[in-house]
Image 1 (cartoon, rainbow, N blue to C red):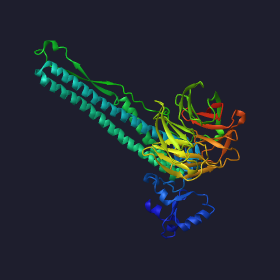
Image 2: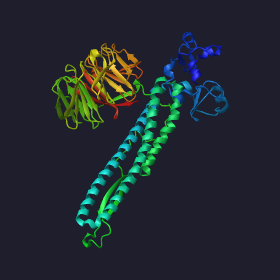
Image 3: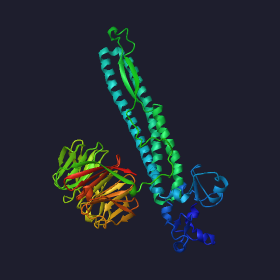
Length: 561
């Protein structure tokens, strides 16, 4: 495979050795600089997609070894048999699939595979497995800690009893302490062994996640399709591993307790034991997250990819907002709404629209972002050039960070805050050391928000166009929607990668397709929009929240036809 990658296939056929510089997945061969130009000009191959050979080689070796043609007949795959769940060449169909009813063109089956719900589901399943393994590991580590705490407490009790019953009991005490330590050590070893197994599974899941990122970036659609079949089997095995741990009660908490003997009244002749070390188990508090019941295997990828034309909005609630000049909003997991205005007020509204409580920042607020895992609220201030982090449990300011530029929209991923630095472009703040780096050097729209979904960032340019890039700042697409929307302010993304943008001056909301090629006016002034300033999509509950600059906010249920 390595020589096939590094040597131009066309030249090699002509008995000429030239290094390849690009790889064509459809031709399944490398091309040198000269052949690349002919390839791009030829009518039969000018539409083929090519990638630099250095990027293609970043794919995992097992992905590079996947053949895109039938090994038996040496012909390209053209059909996918749903009955046998396998790709077929023209001769395979005639020889072995003549009686099969569900035969589909391979091009139809693999179309949009990287943006399909099945690929996204695979990413989520791996993330879910990693999260569940982490939860069990932490729970087992906490059990070790509690065992050690119980051991310390009981040891103290035993020593106090020993003082009361004199030196005659020294030998009994030593025996009991040994029993205690032996019991704790035995259970410790069992739990540590289980944690080692979990860490091994975590490494496997991490490798799959890394491979999926590389596959998504560099593999052909067919390679992606076939690779997902391999990964699927290992994912199912890991799920079975988790289920077996729970069924076999390997995650039951072990508790050490102490029970004294009732013969202290007849000391010293009747006493032959100070007490008994008791090991008990109780059900663990750890729970596994599950996005849905695994009733059937993932069908790759014969599922409908939701489009912008499928969106159906149902108005569930219209709320009267508090304060003037609403700049941003968010929904908390319990359904409460956070609204912030330019005058430094953060209002947390109850689900019925009444005021729950209010925070005052002391500066002009621009945008907010709620971090659910840590229950922290990140607040930006445009003119103050700062980011403030508020602990929502205590309602106290945790820290404030100066970033040296005007700052508006902000989102969080891992230990990084991505923010709209206006004329400074798209910037990144590392929370480990508060350092700021520039990700994209461009001028972003003043007052506008930014958004993150999957491994992509979305931001609004100063000409009202919308740009999508990866987390390293590499451009994916740019959508020109200024003819349909003016004064873009709010931006959010749903579970299918559809992008919603609010038009502050055009009194509307436009939705853009995941590839940036299509758009649709979703809501307008007739729906009550008047200078819509902010919007937020609740991906857990499929709800869209929109707020005008003053007076009203609207909550919609979002579904697909």
